[in-house]
Length: 54
Image (cartoon, rainbow, N blue to C red):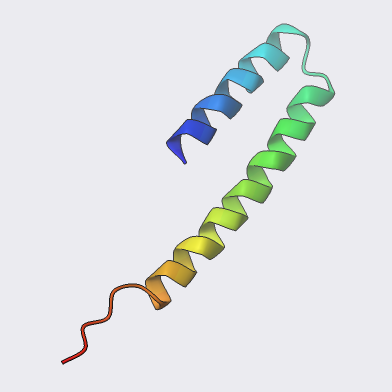
């Protein structure tokens, strides 16, 4: 997930150089989608994570 954050940071810097065009909007949209996907996966992993059965 840190790798995705670094990739979108680089995309944001490149978009800033080119004048904040559509690249920023699409990168922000993708970042929002990935945030919610990882949030859902995190919640699922908390629920179905390690369970100690005795």
